[in-house]
Image (tube, rainbow, N blue to C red; front, side, top):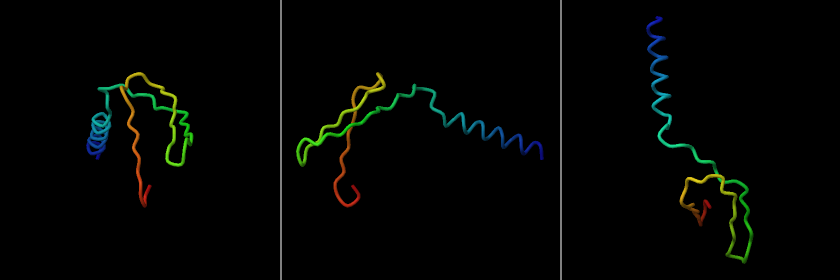
Length: 67
């Protein structure tokens, strides 16, 4: 019984270690998103960039029933 528990603990530890990403540092997410309506179909987005390790941001737009 103790051997089974030990194997389960070892399996869980290996799983946790393999799921963690240690190859790249975590970036700080942008904050303070502000949306300004310029015209009916035109908005301006601004935010505070809290990290220095990215080269660009992608902004996706979705139209339709589930937008």
